[in-house]
Image 1: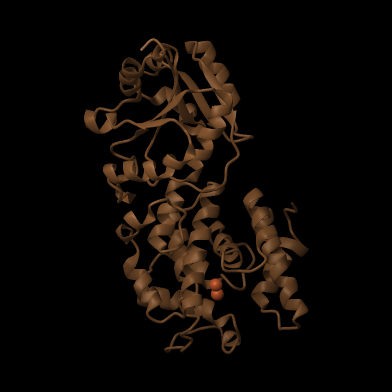
Image 2: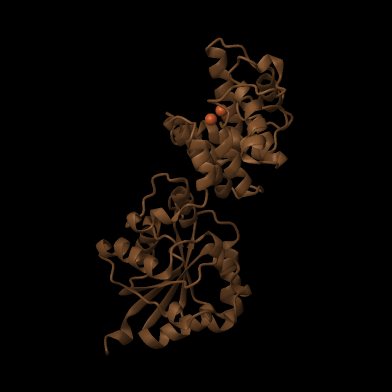
Length: 377
Ligand SMILES: [Fe+2]
Ligand SMILES: [Fe+2]
């Protein structure tokens, strides 16, 4: 008991839906800044993304154990939020934990959360309870100013750790599980069958696509959402997902079926993009003009493209089944617009080198974005 009074306890709350290696890595980074004696992991009872979640509380606790057991970290999973039910304001939970664990309390939160902390319930009562350990990615805009502001206004104690992790996140893992792509989750066998959100459209594609094309379709959907989230592009992620998944829906079924397509596309590799938008509407019930147009230009590009059109164009080139994408992928993850133009140039010069005919829309895209670019980068 005497010892407990001097213990440093780090509280690590979150949905852990599912838990993944980045949770471990963040803790290891935090341990460099705070030499804590133990971690109390506090899974939220009702994750904020309720509609998207299929992993119940008890299974999340099991998965946390699987992940942390071999880490060597001294941890406890506390089910306080489950016991409290729906009344789980951070200030109340941290106060209860302070009473239970005594000693010095540290509370790990993300940079996003700190930015919005004044919208939390009674934040002024939270600051005296624990030192906040804030995970801010390098270059995170506004975080340092916010820390200064909170220190001055509330006397908050805040330690910032600069953590540059990988892109993995629980929501991207959920997407991978729903797409039936590999997902690095300890204990995946416990949960993988529960992810079936997109099964009807996946089954429809699987019924006629080759294994390679079916994998590619899912990989493009995943990459589109990953890039859009990374850059916080101002587009609907559901549209990005559907456009990615269905972009090649006509690739292995090129019958014209009476559809009106540009005559110079017939017999050319670009035919499937035009047929793809028409068949996505007819066979998959897609009516959204943004999705249809992203499918319609995913191979050729065109002048003056929408963000969604650019995104699907790039995701198609940069999906994980494509060889040699590392460099271009790095470029687009750094700057979306430069990445898009790099993809366009790479594709344009590839077609030139193969001495294939250049489809007019691709020439127009190249002229618009690169040769005569009004907005050079
Ligand atoms: Fe395609
Ligand atoms: Fe494709």
